[in-house]
Length: 269
Figure 1 (tube, rainbow, N blue to C red):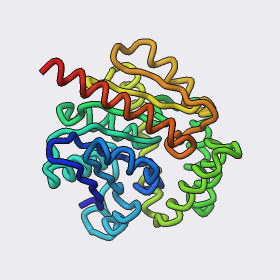
Figure 2 (figure 1 turned 90 degrees about the vertical axis):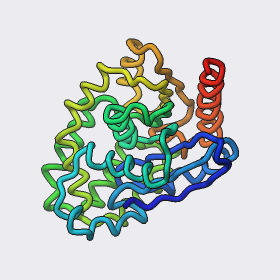
Figure 3 (figure 1 turned 120 degrees about the vertical axis):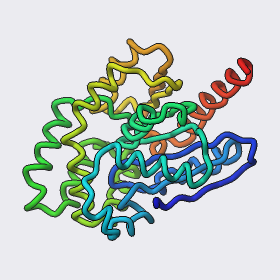
Figure 4 (figure 1 turned 135 degrees about the horizontal axis):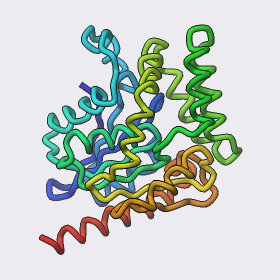
């Protein structure tokens, strides 16, 4: 079972589930906890092999299992069941946004709404080259070197330094075999993303992107034009990980979206 940490405000309050990206951990949300827990019940999750869920890698069942987006999404669904959470708002960053999309496809009734930070919706030429480099050199180059390179290319500016440092710090705790199992998910990502860009989630969705997220902002801009209940907020002076680069703006924008949606549901009821 995944490691989780919960902050319970009130049994009557909605739940918000935070999903980090590949190589990270739930610690990336440290600047969201206080603001969110004042309004919601909060559940932080460490994905399998990450953070304090690292022990899952040694369990025989998971050690031999091939990872897919469905298997890692099922981990979260099982965690919700264990915590008696029937539905929740989801907040994800980077690859965590793909996991949220997968959960919404598997069990759409679980997702009240979603906030996608640094969303990955399409692999452009640069990202495909990165993936190719990773698969070419993954057996001969220490994976942390690859991860540092990826982090620098995705978040190259000085004001992205804290985001880079957080991702690299957490990635150092991954075992090599665990990294490779997660990296193999890139084989499945293109057809999945193609479907996601053509099919809108049922739940209202807010995309929060940094204006300097040069790899992933353009595809989101293009995708959002064809969607009816998805919204885009672009944050100035931020890169891929807005919740770290600009936490105050991220909290303000995302909480307003969740509260506005909650009020609309109450009015309908």
